[in-house]
Each structure stands twice: as C-alpha cells, then as structure tokens.
Image (tube, rainbow, N blue to C red):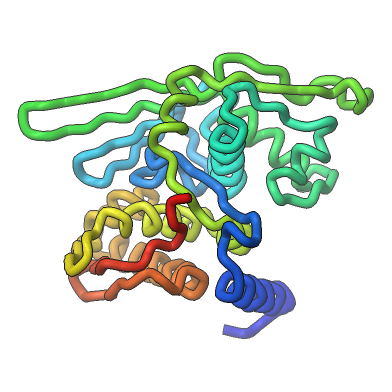
Length: 289
C-alpha cells in the first residue's frame, strides 16, 4: 500500500500514542474513560442503514437499536465517541444530568473532535449523529434454554440541544439520561484507555478494542476462549453478505483493524487461528481503581 499524507499522519499518531501508553498508565495520564458493557458485546451500525432498527448478536445476547424514523439510526465513529463520553461523565460526576458545554464548539471539543463548519464539517456531522442517538432506544435480550430475558432502555428522557447557537453565553444545553440507562452505566461500565480511542479511526476498530477489553476480563488465569469467525461475523460484521466470500471479506477487514488495536493494546494475549480467534488470559489493560 502506498503511504499518502493521511496514512503517514495516522502512522505517526499511532506511534506517538503507543509511546505515551507504554510510558505512562491511563491513571497517570488522566486518560481513563468508561463504556457500558452493553455496547461491548454488541454495538451500533458501522455505516448508514435505512431501516429504523438494527440488531446484533454474540450468540446468546442480542442488542437492538430502535430509532425514530424521522431521524434514523446513529452510525459510525461519532456515536461511539459520544457514548464513551456520556458513560465517562456519569461515572465521574454521578449524575444523570449531563451538561453539554457553554457552546456547541466546547461540546464538540469535549468529544476530542476539532469543530469545523460547512456541509461536510464535524459540526454538521455531530449534530446529525447526536440527534439520531438521543432519539434511539436500546433493547437488550438474553436467550438461553427455556429462558428469554430482555430490557428496553431509553437513552435520554429529555433535553435541549443545539439551542441558542448565536447567544453562546446562554447556551447551557443539557440532557437528562433515563434512570434505567443511568443505572446500567453505573453497574455495568468497564474502564478503557481514552488514548486508544482517540487514535482509532474505524468504528470496527473501536468495537474490537472495547470488546477485547471486556472479554479478556472474563478469561481466568490458565484459561482461554475460542470464538469462531462465523460468530465474530455475526457480532461485528452483519453488513457483510452471508456467504463464503462475505466471511472472507469480513475476516480480512477484522484482522486489519485487529492489528491496529493490538499495536496499542499490547497486553492482550490472543492467537489468530484458521477456525477463529483465541483469547488467552491477559494482564488487565486498565486495572480497576
């Protein structure tokens, strides 16, 4: 692959982040973030989907995101970053009232994104994804023998967003998370390293990093777990066709993003096999503080 300016910039960013991660803990660098484990086992769409619902499954657990048809489903990197920010705010501030900032630029900077205008700028893109996410509902179900458990979670009860854009002093916009979602964040969130999230450009890479951080915590010392490529595709690659070619294409892209994740998350002990991905016992990426 020919290295263009964007690839070179991304490569330098990865190397600098790797040096920082290896030389300083997430606690020391004030880079601990949180994400609910609900989104570790199954996540939101990678790309735009015209339907008003989206379903993913890791076998026993299924997650469905249901949107308001007027706005559509959230997708891509932005809603993932937003969910991480929301969960982190809740874990540190212990409140379901989330203040978005003094103005829209401050809010966007809180997400670690540079505000840019125009039709294709970050401001317009974030507005669209925030509106889609805040008008969505999460449905989580657990299917086991003779048992079907489920919970429906509204993300936001109410809020004011993108109000008083000209009067920046009076912005003071906020959202109020639903009590169920607020409770889930507090009870099921796992710590992640925000320095890793800031480097990753692919929604699949973000999903892989969060999933590995969550899944590796469940592997006991001396044990390992093997997940087949078919199951991984079911969980991460529902946009690929159900064929041998579709599985091949998914595996190729998954391994490409996995390589980037493992470069930054060097503690993870995994083996790539023909039949699937083997996760061995690993030292915790982020200790529980």
